[in-house]
Amino acid sequence: MAFWRSDDRQYSGFAKLLHWLTALTVVGMFALGLWMMELSYYDSWYRTAPDIHKSIGIALVMVTALRLVYKFVMPQPGALPGHSPLVRVAAKVVHSVIYLLLLVMFVSGYLITTAKGDSLVVFGGYLEIPSVFSGVDNLEDKAGEVHEIVAFTLIGLAVLHALAALKHHFIDRDDTLLRMIRRSRG
Image 1 (spheres, helix red, strand yellow):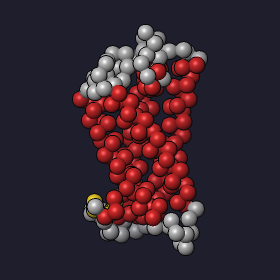
Image 2: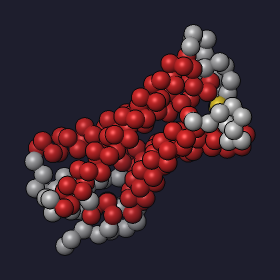
Image 3: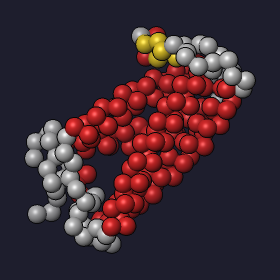
Image 4: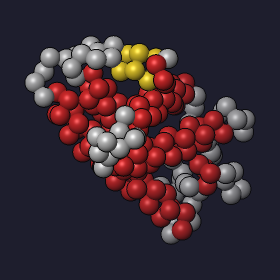
């Protein structure tokens, strides 16, 4: 197996890198978001933390887009032979919902910042994304509510995803988890 190409038994090194980068970023962004909600106006991080959060969010958009392109261009390993039809469908649904929730997170985060017509400025001002949708009453608050609800939903689904991988590893004793962390068993 090459770094760039998956085979029928396991994911490529590149697919694993994108998976774990996304997972760690989502968990880190969730923690950062929770912490930011506790900041007061007079806290020294009140303006800096959201700038970091937005920049990492845009980087995650790029990684997710790359991941989706890679997923559709490069062949991916199929389900393991021991997986029931229900497990196969559940895995596809959970992965699809995770991508959908990430998309909603990206859009709602963008709307929080641009609701009043301001551009989304990230990476210390090196990238500016203009507002394309503003003028809706309380858009910032509505987008903020969606962002928060989806963040908790995404983390909950990520925990479920991780628990399912652990169940496959420790109870079913199959290669589901191993395919995403190292070479599979034989």
